[in-house]
Length: 267
Image (cartoon, helix red, strand yellow):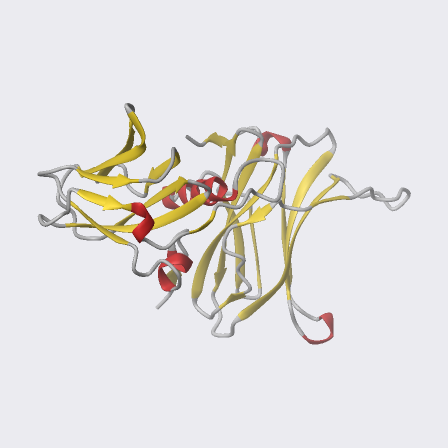
């Protein structure tokens, strides 16, 4: 039976450093996170379950309240004093009134190494893309020897494009990934002329998937600077397999400029 593998933005944190960062919230009373400095960023995993906002009169205070009872935990990310805090929120009637945020584990909020936005924000936007489960492109796909690659969606935030790919391994043997490549190349290749190719290096890859086990589907998000493709050219997305003697399966499909212009805006 095919297994669907979804790697959320918070999985790594919960397994390791932030496993103990848990908050209980209630719909009958409001809890507060008290921060040592001005809060720069607040984001809940599911805004239909939990409301979290900075108190306008006190910029170092975050009020949190459940909008309804819920069973499965959701998430909360907070950035203040150059630290990023990731929490698992669970529902309960015994929610404390205040939480001093400094009693929880955190990591330094590093600036994103590219040109677009901070690291914590780009991770959260990738999470939004994966949470939406969109399938905007039916024909942008390819399949070979039991491996299928398709484009699910293209999203846009400021000057960043988010390409969501879905890779399915229909075989029983694991597929080891050697590389993902993005090329702007000629639409029609002529033997009489040299093909001019320009490689685009994504600024960010959310899950850094290296292996796709047998009978598993994986979703991945790549982030690039915004682009348009000139006439008579295409964007080729290529997946290469790591194998002995460079004999791995390679799959690719092409995008047109009109595909990129369909990018949906992220909030």
